[in-house]
Image (spheres, rainbow, N blue to C red):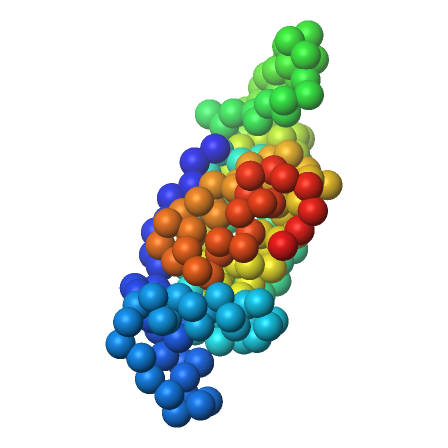
Length: 201
């Protein structure tokens, strides 16, 4: 799995604080005042102002199963690698940590058979969009995700939960690390979830 931060709103905390101050006609020069205001807004549940900042991630090496969960977050924007156009013969399978070595060998054998059938279908002239039906849900994919900070917080709160599936939880932990590094006041309250601690902020 690889998670790259492609873009994030520059000086996001400053922008969010500036937007928030419009409602009170107040101002501040100190970046720490901005961070305090952002923390206060989050604590009070006034998260709409976080929609003014956005981030874009390029994510690769996750399974289609993980991507299916992620794309349920309809307020985010996605572009996913197309199995209709991209040849899947060189794709790999994502290994769940619960698989024993025997489980993994058996899964790899089935995957090899699926890729062989996929190749035969293509050789017979079957279009990729139909040949892909034999490919497993565990096959790797690649996508771009863009969302505003409010929606990213929503995704992270749900998907960092100990009850979330392992792969999307790891994906969101990596996303949280990147977001926290650039805009700590916007995401620091999610640290307990990101660190795998029980409960929610």
